[in-house]
Every structure is written in structure tokens, then in C-alpha cells.
Length: 162
Image 1 (spheres, one colour):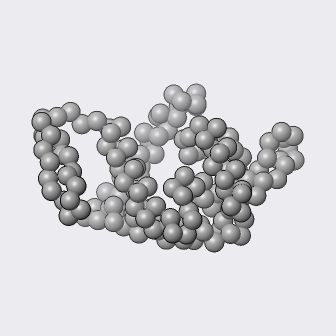
Image 2 (tube, helix red, strand yellow):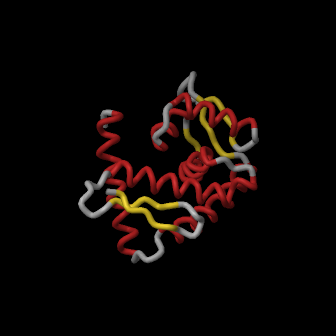
């Protein structure tokens, strides 16, 4: 049985009753979609679409990367990443240059405009994280990240043969 409750927005929030089985994928997916929505509310007016946020975040961590590496790190398929990167290049957020070590590969890095937007997205991400973790201790948040990392590594081993 699913119980519903009225929330301020007028929408009903479904809450599984205690005897229902917990579904990890559904819980994580719902959390991710809510984080993406909250982040988009803060960045859309600056022209930052939800799909570029993880690319910007990864390029801030790595300085430069390849399409394949970004696709793997973010967990989206190569064709989707190609479209995202093409849009980001068109919008002046990234630049590409040939990889001297590999003839067919290009390296991708943020442009000055991309780095400026990364400051905006980082601030927005911190706001969303603060909202999402309200009521949790620093230890609980650290433990969540630790557990999420282990689960990601476990699933990547199957997906990528690590």
C-alpha cells in the first residue's frame, strides 16, 4: 500500500508503507532526479542545462579529459556525451585539442567562460547539498559518500570489467 501526503506545492508525495520492500535503484534515482531539478532551478537562468553540470564538475576536477573518460566517469553513453560536448563547444564552454599521445583522440578542457560558469554551478551545488543533507550529521554525510563510492565501484566493475 502506498500512502500519500499533501505537501506545500499541492503535489502528493508517495511514501511506501513499512512492509514494502526497499528498492535501492528507485531511491537513488529519485534522489538524483530531485538533486538535478534543484540544481537546474539555480542554474537554468544562466543558460546551464542539467546535462552539462556533471561535465563541468568533472573538468574542474581533472583540468582536461577525453570524451570516453568523461562518458565513463559520469556514467552516460558515448553518443549522449558526444551531443552534450558538441553543445558545450558551440556555447563556448569547452575547447578541444588533439591529444599528442594518440592520433585520433582529442582532449577537452573548460574555456574561461566554462570556468566562470563552474563557479556558479559549484555554488548552486553546495546550496543543493546543504538542503539535501539538512538534519544529517557530517559523519552521516561522509558515510553516505563512502557507501555510494563503494556501490559505484562495484557496479562499474560489472559495467566496464574493472
